[in-house]
Length: 271
Image (cartoon, rainbow, N blue to C red; front, side, top):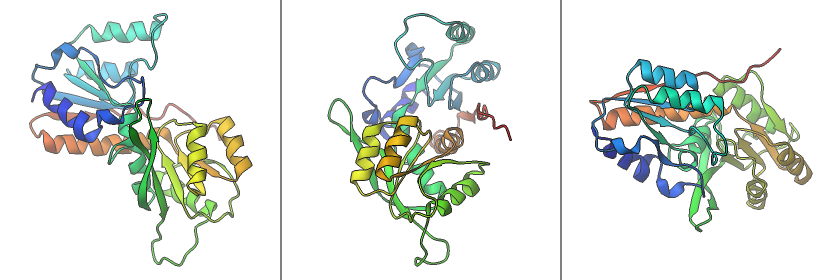
């Protein structure tokens, strides 16, 4: 398989380039001149950590597909961590393809993975516009689904318990009244503490907003307007979505070795 073959399926179908948010990095971030080369080993990862790069070098990976890039903003100064990573990358010819928010919005991506993992009814997409005026389905709007019958009522506490059970979490951060009935849920994966998203979710009559990280000021705003917020594990959801992507790519390219690198959640909990 050649680089351009996997690039084509990523940018057109699995993590569409059209869903790219504004100036964020998308596509080849490193060693793009290898696109005409053949690849035999591909590694998927959430982040380009030192540990992930060591694994890729040790296993002679040709291509890394990462949700997040080496850097997220323009470089004003090379810090030691970035220098160490670039030094590692010079030791073996590896190309890096970055997905970023396009993989949150994609069909089967991060937001949709949360909806499926929580056994919710997917009603429609939650769309925003980038700076080019293109609609991006960054999230999903869902309604509760029940295991036995449709006459049950779901409270915020019920939803939190489902999240803990389905995602195997020891704790869940939230904003809101545990006894409040939840009828419509807006899900936006990743770290998206954007007040405009919360305003739009509220305007669409959503009772609850699920995200990968709760921003303090977003929490205050949501408390004031009565919108419940739940924080899921950023790491666990993205790993679930990347596992699905790894399986899809393995079926599309059966003669290429695909590996998912699991670095484990960097956050620890002190009990």
